[in-house]
Image 1: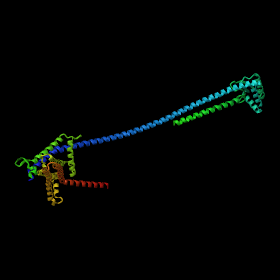
Image 2: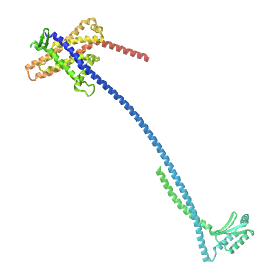
Image 3: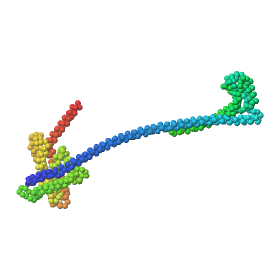
Image 4: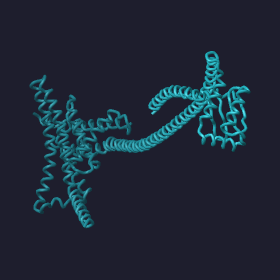
Length: 272
Length: 248
């Protein structure tokens, strides 16, 4: 008999005891440990996931903040650039205005100097030319230039037509019936008498003739009455000389100004 | 060949009337002691955290593997079946593997042991079936599809239990016997190869026994499964109908 029933019963009992023991010592414990670990791992994963989510949110908020900061920075930079540009323009304008005013004042002073120079030139030239002419006439022709000048003026007066002479007489009458003879030299008494005589003859006897000496003017002599003047002297020559001098000075000044204008243009281009 | 060489039941150490201690029972106790001691040693200090001790890891792999197998075979939560089916597998496995120890005879090479295990399965099948779906539902299965099938169903139940017992016994007994015979013929190399083959057969038989037990238990709890399936289907259909109604 291959089956021993006692052994079968014993093996069944043995097996049931083994089931009980293994359930107690093996399966329950192992499964419990596994469940616990799984739960723990799940918890950790959940935690990690929530942390990741938090980190993502944090990252997102940081990114937004950074973008905002960058935008603000850009705005501030743009504003600063704008202001700097405005400030630069203002400074340039001010500098230009300053330069302009300096140039104006310089121009004015130049003009003043120019006119003073021409005036001085005219005065000096007049005196020198007058002195030279006087000396030359005296040496070469034994003639007094003052006397000749007065003589020529009187000849001019005599050469005027009737109407003009009447106008002059009329002008003298409205000015307290007076004519002023102004000269740059002291006229000798003989010459004064001759002049007075001639004026009375051509314009009328009742006119009072007054003599004035003005050494600063251009050498010459003139008849002055209200609103009219009859003059003879170096004035015209000196006018020509002055014109020529002015022309030369202005030509020089223009040349200079062109140079400065070009420099300024270059500067402007560099700045823009 | 003597009958003693076929089954270790005949090697009796101590006898007192009907009660006697034979090699089968002694070997079984040895295997049980080894398994329980091993389990106790390993599970004494369990860690539910990392790092995992390697012996615990081994046991966890084993238990989890059994869980997965049971889940696949039964398509049910494996926890209720693990102690019974797992112990079947482990007991047969350890018994068979220990065959390499000289002087040891596997308890599974005794028809009494395999019959005892088969009887356990024979009882466990209706036990699990009744626990899961109730006595009435379970008994109904024997008259399906018709009442005529009742004797065949009962016969099937008995014959498969017998088959379970004889299959394991035949395989294990023959394995150890073949090794013994070959040892007498060619003492050097060939028995080693046969021993290795015997180990393989032992492992496979443990697996087959446990899986078949699980399949029988699963078929015993089929009534409940079917009912649940039906309920799930009807609930699904109802849900779909509700959805259909809602959408129209």
